[in-house]
Length: 494
Image (tube, rainbow, N blue to C red; front, top):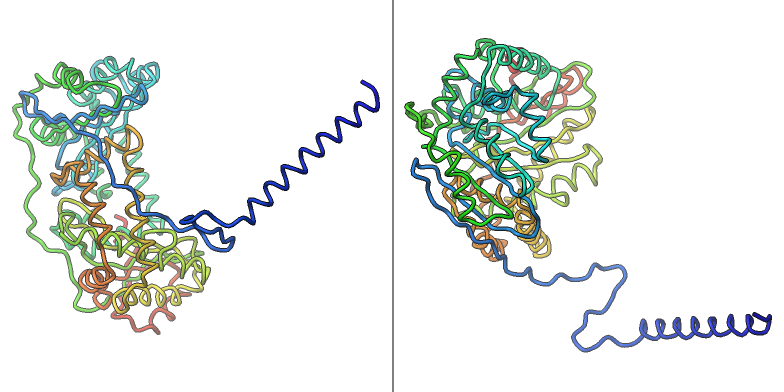
């Protein structure tokens, strides 16, 4: 190519670029079409109303032995999620705290003819993952597997549910590990704060008084016989529900479960959570409980009281109220204590919903030298949401946060299965999510203040602080929040 030709080519490209830039510039200064939102660089664009939430169809039937099977067909990916749950959980512990959690964790430590290593090796070969565990109200066995490996993986899951090994040697090994972890709790301020708070708010005799993980005295007595006895009461067809979500038809899913669990029967009467005979503690006035951790760099703060029933008609406004108080990153507690004051990496609040109402807790880990100042800010925000009507913009932001999070709970097979299983614990259908979205959208500022005044009781709070008392006690006493009690670490973490 000659020099003249190259020069002409470069000139042509330059001309085209100049014309393109001119077009872009003209578009940038051109008036917006009628109805379009003008672009303002220092303001975020306004969001439109969220679209109506559409939930997938759930097909539910019972097997002949009483097991409930719920199926959601989700064909986008060749995956299947299975969650088998057994109602009762840690509420069945009774006089042996921790037995439900321990038994649930033992389910996959050998099953059928396989030891723990062989079981995990076969699951890995199938590309499957299986977990077991206990919550306050149920024991859960979950399986995630590629659709093509579903049959063999369900065989393994059925062995875990119906034929756990509970070998004496493995029980002893896991018991010793659990005892070691209980000792470690004494050096974990967050764990100490939670243990102390729950033991105070839920008095002796309440199912939530003791730790779901147990204590040293109860765990030390666990053996294979104790685990087998609890398993026989707690894991039965009569209290079982199976949720299956993924690349499988409802008919095929039911047939697969019927082949593996449909003939399962037990002679043991299933355990039923005993009725509540002890009410949670509602303080007549705020009381402060201190746990000494010498040389701690931070203080852990828990502030709360007995919570709310999940089936309360105030559930939607409660979730909006808590979102703006401490349930989101931009909540008042977090923006105050983290962003404005720099006292903590994060401050939060939450309602714990269980079959029997759990606690409400506002919490944070704060620098030791600002422990008293942090308590002042906590109580300021707890009282502020009660005393003043929430501004319109903040209300809309909280409502959007709650509603726009709902589609994410239905995004994957695992999330859909978890949603179906969790709602079923309260006898709620998946369609409840769509109704909940509509309820959230209709929450008003008056609703938020009403539920805040009804359910937030900062003048009757239980306050637990775990930290270096030599450095923080005087400052806390000067606040005159209420009577102060010092708890021994050994009494908190037994």
